[in-house]
Length: 143
Image 1 (cartoon, rainbow, N blue to C red):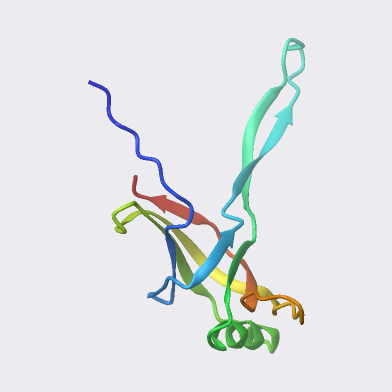
Image 2: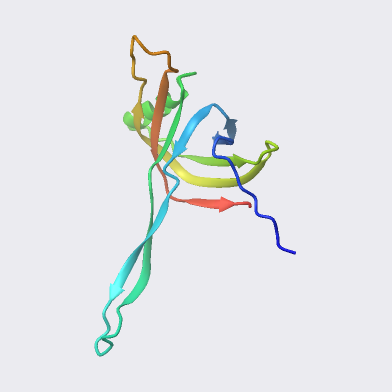
């Protein structure tokens, strides 16, 4: 008998900052890691080139949500003023029953960019802010 694979929806997620779970984010992007490749050509071995893994780079993380409070702005602004506050963040993916199933623990996040909403008189949209974060890598836990 084969094990049944679970498939998850991308809209069932939460973000945890400073140990506080916040489900109000509408989008999270940039959860990406890439390992650089070091190529080495060995003398006398002309049939191939050695390809060795090097450093792993992590992309910036972007969080978006409707404007609710000044917390994200205050965090960015304190970094902008030289009072850098690094926080561990978790992105939590929930299954169809609403329970956490997969977690990405992001280490030492710092905001480097904040975007406010776009205002349009003829639109009926939620005012959205976004914050871009650098970090020192992440680990995946679960499923």
